[in-house]
Image 1 (cartoon, rainbow, N blue to C red):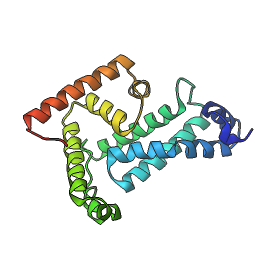
Image 2 (cartoon, one colour):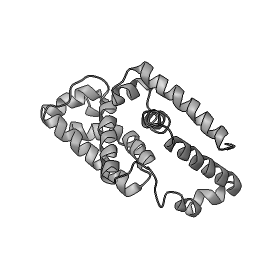
Image 3 (tube, rainbow, N blue to C red):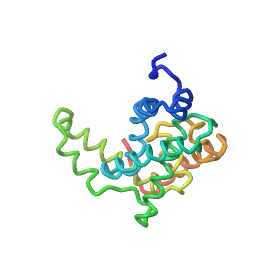
Image 4 (tube, one colour):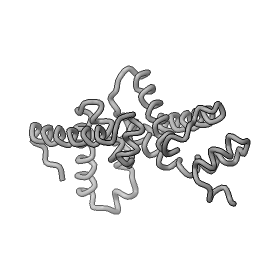
Length: 193
């Protein structure tokens, strides 16, 4: 059977047994989602690429040391590793604000901007910026669930595994996050289009 047709757990087993090509298939299978998750949180391409690379280095080392146990979905495990490395990065930077100095400046150089209605693009960009600022004001546990769900595109089951809580707790945190976001929108008299 071709290795690209194998399930994740079969590829992990093959890699641990010495098939080095199995890890390449796993990385290619999950790289887009993992990188997107990292980038959406750190908002800096260089940092995202470093964390992405560190994530898969740690994945390989953990597999080689036999530290991976099939407790859930392989992808959730990889995202959890990336998540922990992101937290480590922000701790090292001595702040937890996930901003980028050049994140919004490149929007004006985008070829897509000239194709779309400029006003619509500017409104969309401003709305996204406003929502990100509001999310940053949430308590850490609520902010984490919102980022994992809406920016990381993870299911509540995956979020529960990554954050080491029950699905009901993850759902509750999302509920309170939405309530708090509505309150913040009202307090700041924001109109989100």
